[in-house]
Amino acid sequence: MTADQSPLTRSALPDDPLALLDRWLEDAAATGMTDPNAMTIATAGADGRPSARTVLLRGVGPDGLRFYTNRLSLKGRQLADNPRAQALFHWRELGRQILVHGACAPLGDAESDAYFAGRPRISQLGAWASEQGTVLPDREALDARLAEAVDRFAGAEVERPPYWGGYLLELEVIEFWQAHEYRLHDRFAYARDAGCWRVDRLAP
Image 1: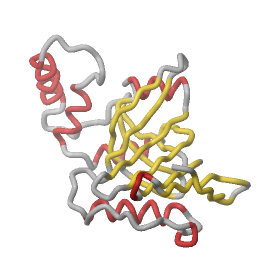
Image 2 (image 1 turned 180 degrees about the horizontal axis):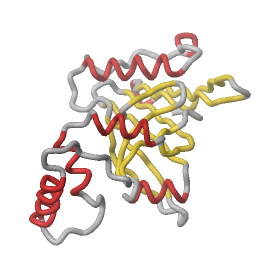
Image 3 (image 1 turned 180 degrees about the vertical axis):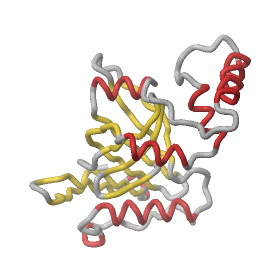
């Protein structure tokens, strides 16, 4: 599948933006690209300093987007100070982008536990080994922490670290961007308005 530069028209948009979001995620997966569910999460702390990194979308529904991470990381600390975030999907192969903006809150323990239990064991152990974003003297220090985690949970299930869990990014504004020739792209933003979705075309 290659970039679609046919016009994105208002009349072709569904009333519910989740229908289009799901369709574009499926189109991205159909290309065979690596990690079609990769999204950049932008946050800012109390000091206003922005930060962005790529995570994997692990669930989508009417209540929002789900992702999982170390809550003591920079993004976790920033979300604790300022619980608003923006997610960006960019599929160069399709000439498409989606932006999602909203409040971001930690998921409950039960949901985080269930997701963690389904991860590969080495990934579970890695969550214990990595103090995400902290300074390491060398690679050997990380390998040593992994070895400690392997010994700690030898012959037992790996528990979810108390500092590791999921987040839910609520769907307040969802913008769909489709490339068009001469950089006159099509952009439509869905925004919640009195319980319904208002749709506006945006200048490129």
